[in-house]
Length: 144
Image (cartoon, rainbow, N blue to C red; front, side, top):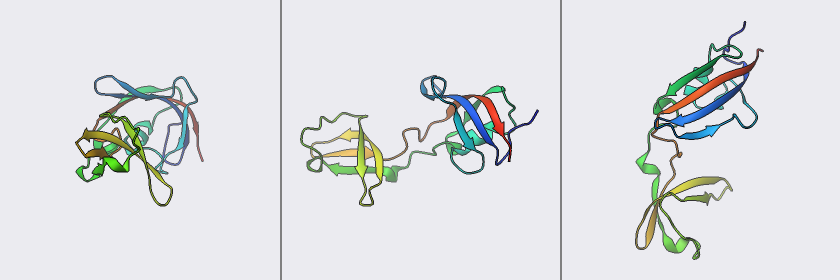
């Protein structure tokens, strides 16, 4: 029976959890995740965790933050004047905002602090700074 190796395209069901057991994403109720190893489509720890698995094999892997979304970077916190935001916006800590760049790209920001005239937004990935746990099941391997 073949094992997953670099450049294979695989279909995987997964459930991603934080260390406290909170589920942040899962493919169980939808189509499995399909990707090609070595193309950098996923975080390194996920790809490494799937390597050498066989069809129908299940396992649980722990991915340290360095192989996931990295550490929280202080330089990705920015202070924004409240008068640059829509007037009717009801701000809350943890609220998601979207910022549009001049080139049309969008970036998700999280409100991390609310001050009198400004807010502090966090542009880090929501899972930055966290170790992740994934329950994996390989459903299909397509070898080149």
